Picture 1 (cartoon, helix red, strand yellow):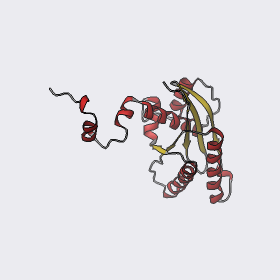
Picture 2: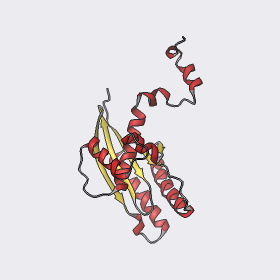
Picture 3: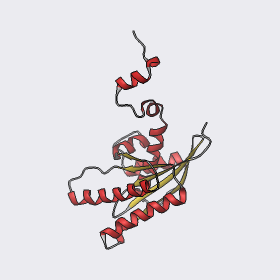
Picture 4: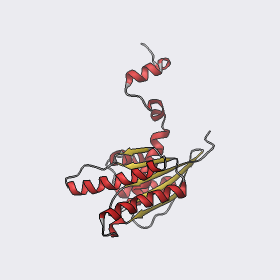
Length: 188
């Protein structure tokens, strides 16, 4: 039985809009702590945007003391400049987490959607509605960057608490699993 709460910070990185979502998990009860967006796109200097992202992530970590940090991995698009900017945003968010001693876990957008909705091709509206159902909250504005970040946090919870995830954590393949779990192998 889980006695202390686990707090997960999920980030949907971006230099125009960055989403963040925090959940707490205690005794298998998941509660929404906060979700929101940062709009670094309003800063004129691209380096100021990165500083704003770093400071915001650091501030959330200081305020909520998360035990886990999860971030959405960039998807590969056709625009190289956009990918570079997104990678920088992700990098400074990761640096902030690591500065505070958190382990970083990345999830692909498809993995996040699959984990939350059961469909890796779900749209942002479907993800938001599933989160509203799972966490019993009303989110009237369509800040999809915030709900995407919340989905990253939920995905991390689901991935780290699944039976399969625990059984295979840190294993490099079936051979290693069999070596570490000889009692689970049956011969026919």
